[in-house]
Amino acid sequence: MITQSLSELSAALAKRELSAVEATQACLDQIAATDDKVGAFLRVDARGALDAAKASDARSTRLGPLDGVPVALKDMILTAGVETTAGSQMLSGFVPPHDATVTARLKAAGAVILGKTNLDEFAMGSSTESSALKKTHNPYALDRTPGGSSGGSAAAVAARQCFGSLGTDTGGSIRQPAALCNVVGLKPTWGRVSRSGVVAFASSLDQVGPFGRTVRDAALLLQGIAGRDPHDATSADVAVPDFTAALESGVQGLKVGLPREYFVEGMDPEIAAAIRESAKTLEAAGAQVKEISLPHTRHALAVYYVIAPAEASSNLARYDGVRFGHRTEGAKQLLELYQRSRAEGFGPEVKRRIMLGTFALSAGYHDAYYVKAQRVRTLIRRDFEEAFRDVDVILSAASPTCAWPLGEKLDDPLAMYLMDVLTLPCNLAGLPGLSVPTAKSSKGLPIGAQFLGRPFDEVTILRAARALERERDLCTWSPNP
Image (cartoon, one colour):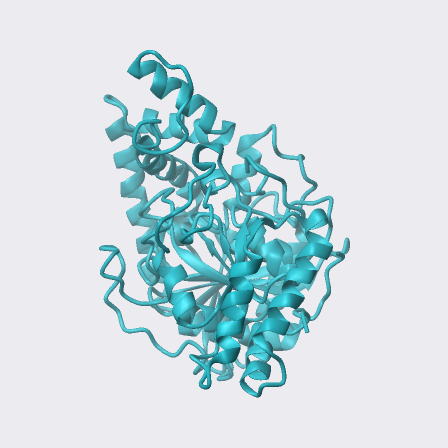
């Protein structure tokens, strides 16, 4: 049962071939059997999950394709009555009084919430190693990273512990771990999915999105969470299409762009070869592939690491030990309370980014760094607008390397930041992006292909990814645990 995709399980539930309780118990058993090795979950709500599964089974009419399907949530997403920590000691013991909008929408669709998955602290990282609570391992190579920051959500799907999950993507935090863990990860257009009730990192970049074993799984999950939310002023008032309607349409006549700047220096040659082979596969299926240029891509990493830390500095200022977050013991003055509470609550990577962002926003440097970065961000977005006049989707790698050994980059923050070099331009431009499994490396490690599309055109990248998935068929490749 646990080897089925979400869509296969949904069909079986609809036919009453399986019960939601059976599916949920199978996931709970798999978590118990494998999570001591994988470390995907921070907490499991077995009682709540089984109660939701029983309620699903008791309904005479299914609420939809997600009804009775066990899923997991990244621990940035609020869940009423279940601790939410963002992987940080700063929020240890915080039990939200309400659900995030995406949580509420999943529950309204009948989905079964198994629990909360591990992440880099406050979603700041590329390996899930900055979590203050535990390490997560890649199910396809337990000595290697699952990627980050949504590594727990990707690993849980890969390890067959759940049938789908939600993560957040600020600079690649869904697509990069999806690529490293052989699952499908989709970052919707900024504004497509509500961020209400999601712990903020960088508000102009953050977006919630799904992980699934197949492209159809990701489409079904996106269907369940997308749409305007009056509780989030930045959610777009744009019609939500049927994301599954065109999945099997193929790519005949589709124009695919292959950006030369995305074959970066230092990229694993096997990954570059896999992406070029993926382009040939799409071409053989009827697509038109052409090389394109996104010239300002070379500035994207620098721009991102000004804007994202600046927004993080502002967002995380609320955790002061007075209104929000961990409060130190024994402080005698207000300044001491601030300093000690934040020093104790935040980990090294979060502190590093707060300091970077505070510097970029400080008097005398704001114009030189933050304002200039925003101007270059506009140029990056215009590059994409120009490219999409000639092509329908853009194809690239999702990560410049396969999963690397745990601990390898911990002492080199710049090397870690470079792991998002192929994904973060999409966030700066507010575009939809998707990673789909496309190959195995010579070491038996997953390789993911990334598709980028026009704003609010998730349908087309899903269609292109499905065409590649149909030829590659890596979703049945089993992990180690």
